[in-house]
Amino acid sequence: MSGGTALMLMMKAGVLRPSRLVNLRRLGLDQIKLGAHGELQIGAMVTLRALEKSPLLKGWRVIAHTLRTLSNVRVRNVATVGGHLAHGDPHMDLPPLLSALGATVTIAGPKGRLRWRATS
Image: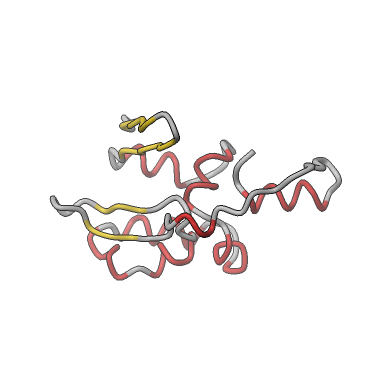
């Protein structure tokens, strides 16, 4: 289960009672940077608020505008891009936006990397 913000809400409601939780904060996936070709690279652990406020979004103002419409500031301060995408809630605004922008998602694990290119 991913998406710690949603996970915590489900735990508070008594819907989910996991026996273990794993904190991913120390994996170094909380960076926002520009790639070699000017593409925006967003780590899975970047909070929605950090992305919204990033000066690197000047070329992608639609992302910052969309993020301001998601939830409230308290949630955006803790909710992450990776959790937002992994949670799979059809009401989320970020996945369709990233798809419309032609975003590429790279998922890395112990057996390698998988790249997925969004198409609209």
